[in-house]
Image (cartoon, rainbow, N blue to C red; front, side, top):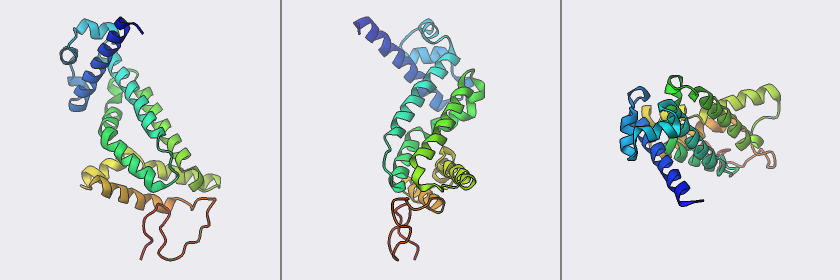
Length: 208
């Protein structure tokens, strides 16, 4: 890659970072390209030439962040639900507020509703794959359990527990595990019966 191409790439990233920072703190409708350009130390014409305007820039930001989110989520390969939930809470501590804000304001930006749908489809597929061997085999029950698992692992549930419930991240992990545990079967390669005192399905201590 030439020095000119590298410089252009860094400029594009600065513009995206500036837009992301503005979006994190302000409603989309209140964001001005003049402010984004000033934050990125470029001209408004540079922003327009690279991204075609505010809506194009917002879509580019969400596309980049969605790629980063997918990359981070795919690194969670542990079959243990407690490990998965710990990583999920860490993920939402970084991205949860932005994800929910993007969904709330998607209708304001042409092209963003389609990305929101892509994000939701990915979340459902991720839950299906991560908990594949813990979901019932039977069709209608499996579909219902998957829908419940998707709801438990959703950013909205994290927000309710974290913000409305005032729970610390570690407490959110425990709360999610308690919600998830009744929905999951024991791993199909392990016996279902456990001796008293053994850990439950999500690795939490058995009820006393």
